Length: 214
Image (cartoon, rainbow, N blue to C red; front, side, top):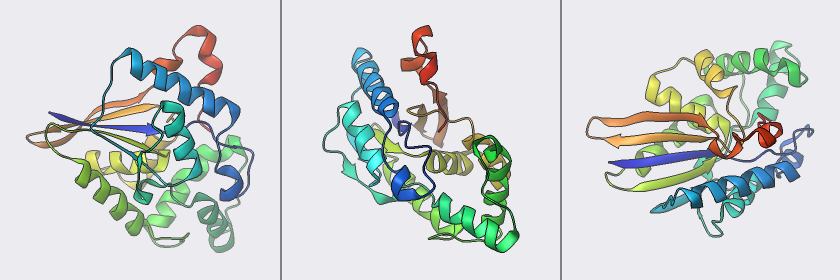
């Protein structure tokens, strides 16, 4: 049985109001990545292929994990949330929220994007197709693949596996921790979700402060 292991990047610059400024790990994000890499070593985890999105926060997470030369695949890049948020404000009068309003904002964005009422740098269908395509290519019996990516990509993969509507996809995305582990088993009946949002490297009491969502 093969596996696909999905890792969300470490904490990025959460105070940014644009993608360029957001796209770098914070000091804590670097530490989260290092701790996860150390945990993989203690578990003797080995991968036949390591894929990473092309965003800076993906590459920095890969380095923290100990993978200096992953295969770069832009299909693992995050959705263009800043531009989607601007489109929500311009087209539908829904302003970009502060951090405490994100839980209400994300489902509205996913539904409006799915209905093609808004668009960032790609349509919902384009985002879904690229994410599903990289998943299907990674699925090979007996092969173990690591993908370093973002929360939106992980939630889209779960939408595909669990047949979630856009609102439920958003609800799956919201709790995803930075540097969390998600597992897909490659079985004779197809890909099966085998693990979601695990953070064994952050479970010690003295690392509780490092459990971050953004």
